[in-house]
Image (cartoon, one colour):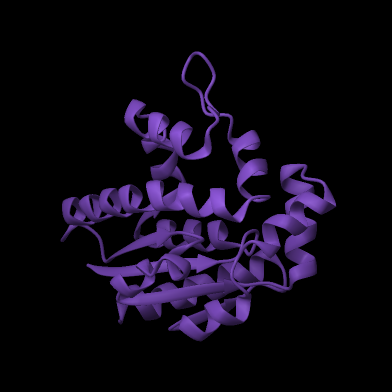
Length: 197
């Protein structure tokens, strides 16, 4: 089973590419979903509260993701502290999922925004980067999430430059066109990477 890192900046179109790979037969794991599950654990909740000197969980244990996001994208030190707590746990869980799926799928695709920054991309056989113009990504962020223009800019600015991601890629998928175009490109790349790789 080939291991594939699917990455790119926020609102670049990673999820669309992941959906195509899933439809074609890949095992797809979203790092955000793994993180969401792990962040429900009491030990991680306590560690986050200690690191941030603030509790972002409600009394019934629900994480206020919007409030946490606002804090992290406005505070580089807090973001680094949370990443140091969460990412090792996320990647360990993804490795467990990969071992459990060995031999059952042609490839394991991990959709993750921060694999290059964390050095985790180096653990994969193939790195795919989805790109899109910043203005388009900004528009999508505002439209889909309801963020203000300033909040969208803060999230875009907090990530690695797209050029840095592209320099690390084995394959790049351009998402400056329509969704249908992106899906066609993703299907072709799936064939190349997972079926004939």
